[in-house]
Amino acid sequence: MEIVVQKYGGTSVADKDKLEQVCLKIIEAYNKGESVVVVVSAQGDTTDNLISNAKRYSKKKHKREMDLLLSTGEMKTVAYLTMMLKDKGYDAISLTGEQAGIITNGDYGSAKVIKVIKENIEKHINDGKIVVVTGFQGVDKFGNINTLGRGGSDLSAVAIAVALEAKECCIYTDVNGIYSADPRIIKKAKLLKNISFEEILEAATAGAKVLHNRSVGVGRIYELPMIVKSVTEEGEGTKLIHINKETDMLENYGPKIITKNDNISKITIVGDSLISYPEYINKIFKIAAEKDFQIIMITFSEISINIVVKNEIAEEFICLLHESLMEMK
Ligand code: ADP
Ligand code: ASP
Ligand code: MG
Image (cartoon, rainbow, N blue to C red; front, side, top):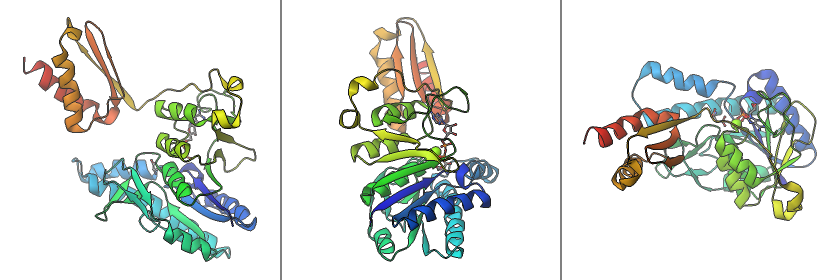
């Protein structure tokens, strides 16, 4: 039997009615004779709410406890969905990231998936069960729960699909597929029938949150057939393709997607002849390396250095830069 992995995002599982629709999609695939592994996100704004609630209990960063807290969102969805499938007479089983064998590297809040130990999922598939797995989470070698980064349920689905050598990984979401721009902002955005892994990887990294960028990266390396489509609307959605294999390159060039990113900040350091003094640039990279800060982009000119980073580290970075570059002079 061929395995299909279906992933349902937060809006698509937001309440009981939405979960009823999800059940129909799962059952449709199961009744076609496919082995179905389902990966789900937390319902609606659950993850955002957990993050803001935590701030009421502590103002400090408790990375390990935050990951434990955030992982509960997906666990609830998995439990509800599995109960509903069982009530409809289908043999389903709920699995946490750990139970599904998703092993991560211990990097709280943005963990990498090291491997998927597939035996447990496979056992349940072989027993004829629909397997329902929490997205967004794995477990490190010490048994700590790690989350994979915001939007990371896509990555869970792709990692599982790769491990199981699934026929396809279908990312069900709240729009009809991948468009030439965010259809919620640009009403005239065009639905793309297909897009190359390379193009959507670039667009997702630049802010097009329809797919988690690392999920595209993993799917691309392992040549996983991936489709993005709507839960509610009929239609083919958007297929991710490998340019050279599946199309004529010449038919595929030209602008495909335009996007913006609200999650990044630009830090600018101004001062005469900056470019002539490499020690300043070296200090910037030293701070980034010591704190494990990701520099997304950096540009230099004679009188300024511009550094692009994620919003959540911008304030701490600017404090450290001030301390290192201005206060030590
Ligand atoms: P899910 O909860 O299903 O993972 P996300 O909110 O993460 O859904 O991603 C879907 C959203 O991505 C859409 O609602 C849309 O607003 C946004 N989006 C941004 N850029 C694009 C794009 N180029 N094509 C489609 N959707 C896009
Ligand atoms: N629930 C997580 C988030 O909101 C993961 C996901 O939805 O993919 O980021
Ligand atoms: Mg998403």
